[in-house]
Image (tube, rainbow, N blue to C red):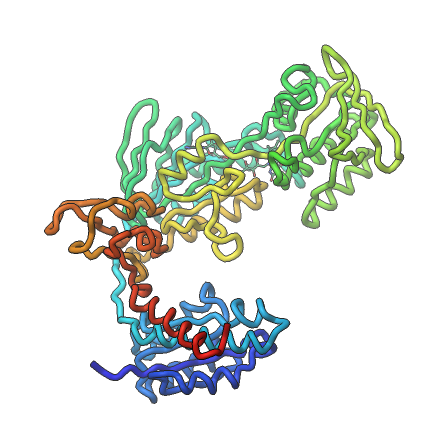
Length: 568
Ligand SMILES: Cc1cc2nc3c(=O)[nH]c(=O)nc-3n(C[C@H](O)[C@H](O)[C@H](O)COP(=O)(O)OP(=O)(O)OC[C@H]3O[C@@H](n4cnc5c(N)ncnc54)[C@H](O)[C@@H]3O)c2cc1C
């Protein structure tokens, strides 16, 4: 066995770490740790210069373990691991210590304790590094086809983008027509373009594309498998079809909240939602009402549904402008709690509505507008915050602006695909900033209003992003699974099944083998979350890179510090 030779690299992260943590002290401390043969500090360990220093020292000092103490592993660990690999060191012999978030940021007012904590973390990192073992990553083939669920603007855009890359696409749409919600929308904000001008070319291109098969009236009945190798069952009115695909895009959108119980909706015939307004005036020849009152934030930003619908204010502005364009004498009021008109074009659009004479009146949630009239809405009474008194606005039509809400069957689909939903019931991305169209489950992506209420430009850009992501494994032909997966010592396993229950990725099964029934981990599905390891009462389940020896060595290192009176 070659002697363990650890190199420690401590990063200043400019002033981000070094502004609080006394880096030279940490460096001196690390020099005295067991098996450490080289320590240095870098202004930016992630810079070209910093990465070259790591590579050079691996060669010069014959390092066989590397510890970097710097910022977040989320963005930087792959970079340091790649540097190790380039220098010929297996990347699983690298250990990351986060002394920015865990020290300089969280203890920014206490440099002494931040420095002591950085030393402890480095000691724990070095202790663990000594027990690291080289690992091999599993490679599996990717079936060269993609499944897109949902044929709205987002799903169609994603499917076309994949098709244009030469990838075979199966697009499943539940309805008999493509287009989603937009099919019922009259014109589009802020350009006032006719929706047909957007939808028709999309649908035409999709239908005539040789790489794309569309299943109208279709439902995804079942999905099994993992990235590269999903088995999918699709049922339409006429057939049930079994497919194999490598990646999946969820583009199932959302639907408009129908606000039964609010403001006489569904009881009074002239109280409608914005979508119903759009549908009504999409027909030629519908009578234009003279007095229209719109009420925004109906069913949104309330305790039961705290989120903002994001583009519903713009929809109200669009429809208010249209009314004024049809009849400049029309009285159009928008009762609002705040106007969300983000982006330069939408802000201009908002200003234009005011120039045309649309009146915006702010109401308070504690004192909401009231509908007057028994058989139909005749007027709306509202407390005008600026005027400090009640106003009565005559109404031939009341339009309620409601947010998009998640589809009822999101839960069923989320279980089938083993991806999570957020607290509101929309599909939840892996990370809102770093992985906005991915799920933690590899090979499954999301775009459009399935993720959160999104307007068309947002849905389209997300669709391009999702298609690009879904195409990568297909074009590579292979996926590599990070070797931080769980494994089962079958001789110790008692087949209690706890691991099967807790695995969020469905990666573990009980199977018959040499030792009778035992747990078996499907490495391609395992994400290395460690739930099964924690739940295993017999210690049979372990995780590569986080096994008992490695973790206990860290705990012992910390305990040693604490009992020697330092730390604590
Ligand atoms: C009243 C109103 C007016 C609007 N006006 C504008 C505007 O002027 N400009 C603008 O930019 N945006 C506007 N929008 C927003 C626009 O509708 C959305 O941006 C767009 O619909 C998002 O597209 P999507 O594909 O994500 O979802 P959707 O349009 O909801 O499409 C999803 C599709 O998936 C299908 N589906 C759902 N579940 C399944 C399943 N399990 N299996 C198979 N298929 C499934 C659905 O049938 C649907 O066809 C408006 C929205 C509303 C409500």
